[in-house]
Length: 352
Image 1 (tube, rainbow, N blue to C red):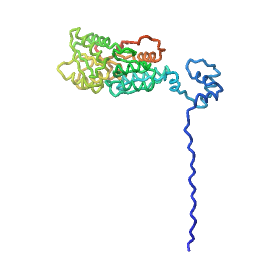
Image 2: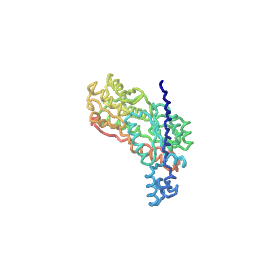
Image 3: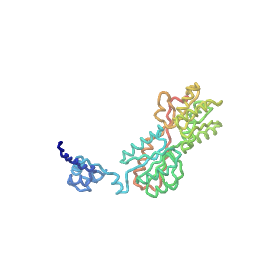
């Protein structure tokens, strides 16, 4: 007869208590370790605040040992300033937009601000929803690089104490600061350059985007030509000032009976594309057969394959003005209206 073995008793697996998530080190902990007051810690990490060298040394030593980081957002909420500056941007893949964003964010970081970028999908979109987000984040200032903010949301931002800085806009809105280029003056300079080069059959390439800056360049160039009794063939192609639309515009321009000998493009992407079409598809020589002038001075404009004569958008000067307006003490009585004349950059696409 088989003897039944007693069942083995299985012990339940031992449960280990999960370690609590590590919390951020507080200023109070730093103060306790350094043997100073909480306010001394705050002064140590506040630029320009008065604190003795001994106290600063003790606080910094304790902060390093504990791994302390200043909570700028919490400090900002207490003093009604978050240190955040929002950038509302469209067409972020554009070389010029990327150049501008890089310059502005670098300069803002240099003055102790945190740049937060909000991307809107299309430059023609209303920027109202993006501006509402900046209110949710209690941004100190908002830089609108694209879009047309509605009157109501602009007023809401201003009523909540937020500064608005508009770049390359021509909106007649009371309250925001405005930094813009003298696009009309640049277009007149472009016309004069073509005339000196002996160009008389002129054309202009634009998109259907219709932003104030692009239309100001077109309007001034056409007006200057008509004042000199010259007609301008205007080609507008697509909803964006992209290289692809520049190719289509170039084909439309050079396949017609009217063959221009001077082409002003409202940005460099359009100019480079139209130049490629003129040379590679129609066998035209630049600048012997046709001269080109662009606008923006993107990095690619200086490539050997282009050598494009263009207008430089002074992004560093614009960024410096943005940082100054975002950090000023608020004593200004009237909003700033800053106008900058772009500098013409001569290369090899205009006859001399």
